Image 1 (cartoon, rainbow, N blue to C red):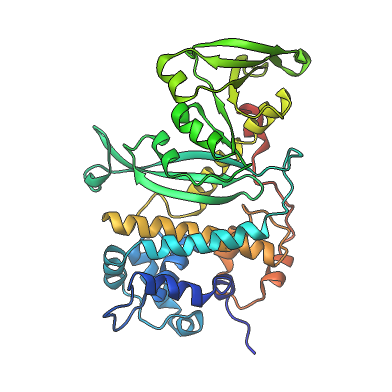
Image 2: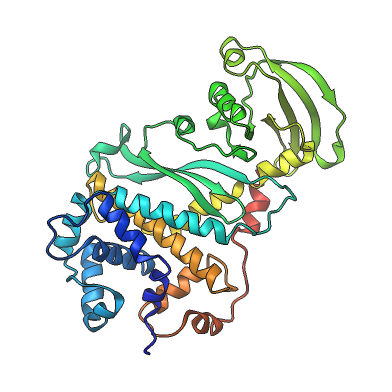
Length: 388
């Protein structure tokens, strides 16, 4: 039996039956004579994995290898006008649900990944990245007086790193609002920057039996109920049990909190953390927050490797389709790496796939030919400069 293309091998890791159930849920193929939702997914995935610049570029690239299209799974002809119409008219929730299915698979595969700290709890990092847009072309995504933008809110499992929750909003939506929609897992630790400091919403996390570690703002009003001794040689300055004194903050979070202050000698600044976890050591609290930097590297990775800067459509539905298909492409690469036991990092795997998408060689043989070191997902130099 002939070996399928690398592109087909990667996409076959996503179960067709599950995808078609997502399509049926939103009647995606209703009244469609040609170019089904699966054809649309294949075209957008190919654009993501091979870094196509535009729909014209995508049409030309696939047209040049027309003899391979049927083997790759295409049953309809890829024409840029047809694909543009599909992106604008077919419900983006199809691909959002498809992404959730892939997220569940990827999380199971990466559940045993080692974490920098020896903790039994799952640690999540929550953050958002802004994707800039042109205001004249995307007026529906108004952000500021001179530009438009969308925000990609992501909850990242730091053992993967695999996104477990993703939400896409207009740029004007404040980050803290996403806490209202965040699924809370009892016993887990949620690490956030101070942009998410809302004590009423943090109390919801605590009531659900979960924990949070968050940066404190400089104007926080509190009184110290108890202090613990700390080892100042590792940068710690205090470990206190506090209660809030501000009128609204006290109403939002009436329970005791833990306040840990750390001095970063490299950047010569003090960092103050708040948490409801009293079982960790003070140094573990600072290290949990340090691990949050992985989500910044995740955002940098997807912006470098996926089509999240130049959009194929100005329509809000088309933009959402492109974002969700890019997330699906990332997840399939992560699944391919794990299921094929590839030694290369998540930074290297998509680069090799991009250059070899139409080659007919087994994935394990393809990556065996690339004698690359297993570079970590993060960037040590950046971590040294931006430790927190």
